[in-house]
Image 1 (cartoon, helix red, strand yellow):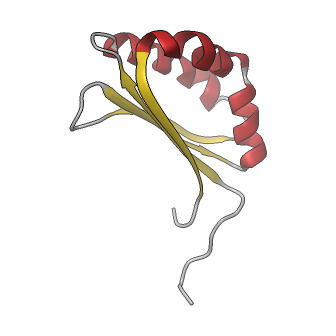
Image 2 (tube, rainbow, N blue to C red):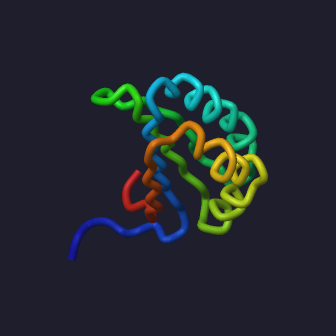
Length: 105
């Protein structure tokens, strides 16, 4: 048996977005605008925005929430829903979102 225990409570989300040509700065600005309110959510542990070292048009959120309910609440927020349904189609060429249970921190 291994020496680690899966923490079934804490959720880590990695959300990657590739900006459409010429839209990276606008995408980063929109995503950055989501940070202050999200960090104030009671279930948010970590919420950071990163730009790929290999692709200037690729950005990623690394998010950590206390549990799945807190993450689901975050995803249901008006600002997040507005981004995915109204803003993202204009700025994002492709995206990939993956959700994990934390194993080791």
